[in-house]
Image (tube, rainbow, N blue to C red):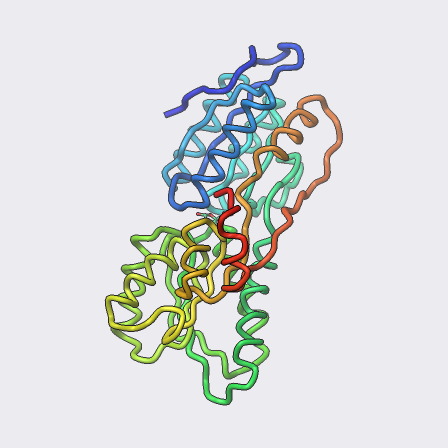
Length: 307
Ligand code: AHR
């Protein structure tokens, strides 16, 4: 469903006030919930009328929402594409209707970059590399093979593709690092648990879990504990996001390292939207600043985490 919130008169040509159609991926993770809140709060603060829709992790729903925004003649469309491929046709429709498009959080693989004005979000390859670098350092003195299982994000999504390739690039330099199983957990806690249970059944000695987000890692922790093993000790765990529940597990010693991915994209998105609607030039790529957390660092910052 497409619902409106925010303030301002909206519609084309209504003075300074603009209307944005935003198509969100879904509500699959703590990260996504924080991202939705950031977009909705920032729209309100910026006086942007927001038409928001939740695609429930389905590309067809996003395409429908974008077409509906085109019909409603919104001033700007922003969306977080669930997968990378298959956007050219609908983006061309927006371009023909002269409605600027902003990609937030995730990229598309369209060759024609004139189909969107800018892409605001994290560098997911870099996140995968940071995860790999921690692992290489952690096992620098190990002689035996390091057996890794990987919980991938949504198949075909930019963060799943890039976090996998960035990680692989770094660990691939040393043959002792072996990914013995890799499967999607769709960025959800439930699927992370289910897939980890299967991993544990078929692989008796897993050293490391690399989960593409905190939620899958948290589901996997339940599976590991269910199998009578200690997460963070018997199996080292690396995740991405740094949402509160993930940071709590890190501080508790159940996760070993988290690569931050910031969901707080709302304020920058509203700034960019106002500029592109005015026809101003904006940077083609705006990369989010992020850090990493060890267990000690998590203990220090936990109480001040916003999401
Ligand atoms: O696109 C960002 C990713 O999507 C987050 O890392 C994950 O938690 C979310 O579902």
